[in-house]
Length: 322
Image (tube, rainbow, N blue to C red; front, top):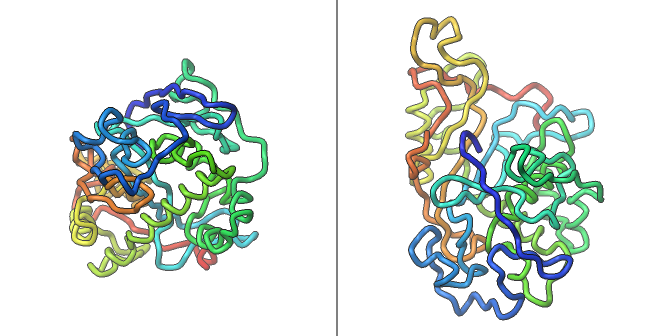
C-alpha cells in the first residue's frame, strides 16, 4: 500500500494463542444467525454486530495482483502462470483508506518482516523475523494439497520461495481482519486453521478477477513494442469488475523518458500491479463483496502516466512462464 499512514492496534490477549481486536469471547459466534451487514456501513460496528460475522475492523477489502516478468527462481521451477496475473494478497484497509499491519505478533510467520515494526517507524513495536517451519507446511495436515498446488501456481514470489511471501501476506495483513480473529474460531480451534481460512479466502477473491482476460478482450496484451493508454486499461477493467481499480506502475517516469521529455506527466510507465476494492457482505470469508471505486476516499487511482500511449505492459521473460 502506498502513501497511506499506518496506524497501530493493541491486541487483547486470551491465553498464549488467542488474540482479539475487540475482546470477543471464543464462544457462540453463530454467523448463520447474524445479518450479513456490508462492511463500512453504519451497522458494521462492534457495538451493533458480532465482529466475527461482519468485518468491523478492516472494512475496505483490497484483492491485489502482480504482473511480474520473471521470478528469479526459474532454475528451481518457480515459474509464472501463462496468460494470468498473479495473486499479491487480500488486504484490510480501514474504511477511510488508512491501514494497520502486523496486528497479532503471536501469529507472525514472516521470515523477513517489511516493515520491521508495527508502524513502519522506529517508534513502533519491533516485528521479530519468523524462524520456524515455512507457512506452506501448515496446509498438508489439513489435507489441503490441492490448495497448496494452486497457490504454488498462482501466488508467486519474486526473488524468494513462495512460502516466504505467503507468510508475509498473512502476518502483515491477514491478522488485521476482525473475522479472522482467533476467538472467532471458537473452542474447537485447530492450530493454523485461521491461516488456511485466509489462504482460501484470498484465492477465492483472486479467482474471480481475470485481469489478463479483461485487458485481452479490449485488445490490450503484453508487448515489448506496443504502448498502451491508462484510460483504455481503466475502461476495460471497469467494464469487467464493475468499479474502477487502482492500476500501479513502476519503471521510469514518463517525463524522464525521451518521449515525455518536457511534459508535466511524472507518472510511471511500466504496468505491474492491480488493486480491486470491495466492501464485504458479512464475513470476508463468504467471498461476497460490493465492488467500489479505488477513488472512494479521494485517493489516487493510479501511479501510471496519463499521457496516451505512454505505458508498457511487458511480455514475460523467456523461460519464466509455466
